[in-house]
Length: 200
Image (tube, rainbow, N blue to C red; front, side):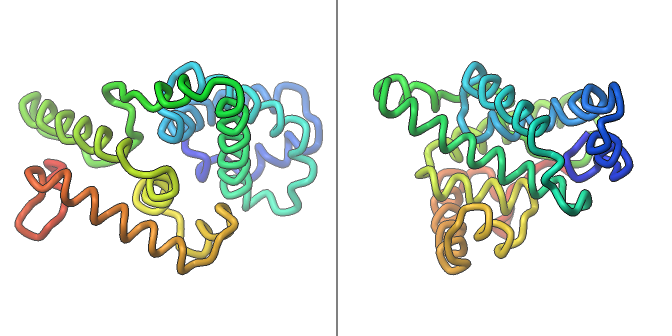
């Protein structure tokens, strides 16, 4: 289940301390949270460690969330902050290993889309996703994060600026630069309108 699809009633049950409510919440968001975290760090072990810390912080601080309808935005900001904190710690202790943490694995990009009618088109779609995933991993961190938040997570410019604690102009610049670089790297997979051909 996507973060944005978590029922408000479940959030309220967690906030009220209802037995089993947090277990239910975590089972709902675990897969989406892992895909989102993995898309930021590109390493399974790192993503799992960050995700566990995020779960702990959700458990400890959910009572501070004043508006349950903003749960998805709250968790997204938490994930970004925790990822940045983790990266700083890794950079201080294992600089060389940090670079290895950006290796790409197949199927890493959490893109959503329509189903495909046959195995051949499914294979073609997987190939496009793999190339997109590899290309995004080559972007500078701020551009990669801005593109993921805007084009994959569907966040608005204002929401991204708030989560990254920067100006809306900086967000627009990073998205523009990131998209420009991606078009250059993925031109063989673009349709005649300059959009990715995802075999929809």
